[in-house]
Image (cartoon, rainbow, N blue to C red; front, side, top):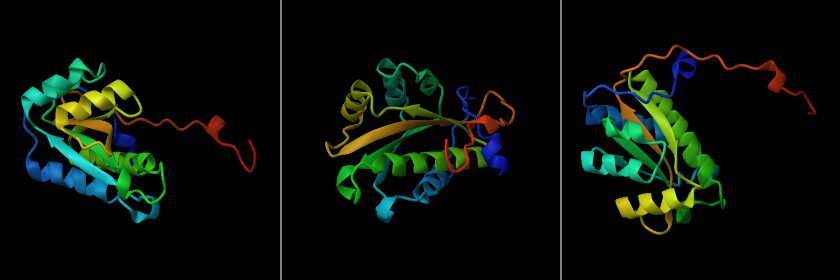
Length: 166
């Protein structure tokens, strides 16, 4: 439970490069997520090219942290792989949350950047990364060594709990 409460959106990074072995661990955690019908309709695009990372803020208004991130991982849904139409969003979201938790566990900083369902972001990212037509980028996970320290967050709110009925 501690990693759940410790996980925070980290947008400031040092210039230290995250090793490939840690990026693989983050993705392994993503691939351990549950998925509808166990179809695992995800693909992950790892970006460590500085020019590519710097291009994304030109079309994604909330992604300036990528200019200092060591890596980004684009989480994509492969529509032909889904058995139950539309569930790719939930499947890829579960994978993304697992990745954020693993990044925290490894001492990395990460933040979830939404792409889908904003059409201009989806199109621009598909064009930039040569993503096939039947694959949709859900989000980008920005990753690096944290240059900011946010304390644990307890967001529990008993007023949001309903029992049996609203």
